[in-house]
Image (cartoon, rainbow, N blue to C red; front, side):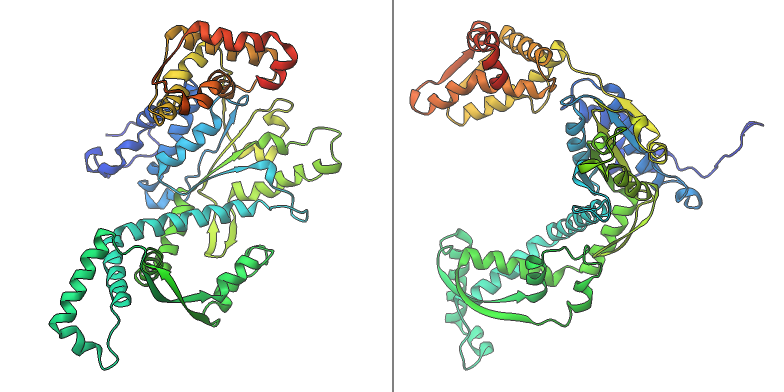
Length: 467
């Protein structure tokens, strides 16, 4: 029984065991665990992102009467370059399996200036959503499509007789020959044989390719207006079996996919689960006294961005997209500005602010070895392609992290990206020589790291350009 002070309660909440099994991986703890595989530290940011992603699922299971009232808690990630903000965006895209786009705020301009307007990020997100759903549908029907394409190829390889297709197909010799060709086709023996294929050129697609403006920027949907009336030109050409198969698979796929259903599902996903990651949002903060030259439209970009984040309708070539429930995550270094320099209205639309700390020597040491895609693992795989085994001693790893941390202190702090620099400098001679060297085993020691990097570090002018 609810307590006396309870303002709202639901008695029809389904037990957790009845919820879909395929959503278990989206628990906040599971999301953080997945991010831990690729990003060292930054626990506060991971937790905030994990909660925001899980809230997307929670909203889908909320009371329909309140569902539209639950708006996303947009996030600003604040931290220096190279601490994991972009990597977090990349991993989120894979975890969510939802329409996701990463954009750079500095690429946009105020409406009326030359450049991309902020609405285009939603149009691009919609394109991603349509392609995502279309890919899913294609995977589901792929066996059927490939079988149909194979039959069409056999028809090209063994054309029907002028006197009648039905009679010939019933003949024993025809079927025997067709079966032989099918086996050869499946074994790959006919890939280079030439066939004559009839293709169609979409006039509308050609107009889009050669138009200097995108369809959305022209302010009208020419695809809908003219797509059904413009003719498709037929063209016969000789191509290889491999090329013909590719074309026929595409043709058969278009026949079997209901694009209207694909578009409707994509629009639903974009509006309900879409995520926009806006990087470098600090670059559109105009500092006092900078309202001139290339910075004149920065505050205008913020004003244009505000209705998108608040919730508005954006016209796309697939239809109108509402942005009310799209999750926006922004990030920026804020070296010369701060989040409070954003226009107040935009600040209010990013209520969650998370600080990412700078990286120290211990962080660099962990980054070199712990992530699933660590630099040492990447270089180990590169050397393996040359049949060379490479290993790093523990002291060598520590020395590399020491140099990376020292260089970030001496010059511009570029975070974990400095590790890529020192690793590249350390291994460049090996990478150049091993194809002809005959070497099959390399062990990187602390002494080797010092010998290679110390002389560069001590040479101030040289280190400025190399490290």
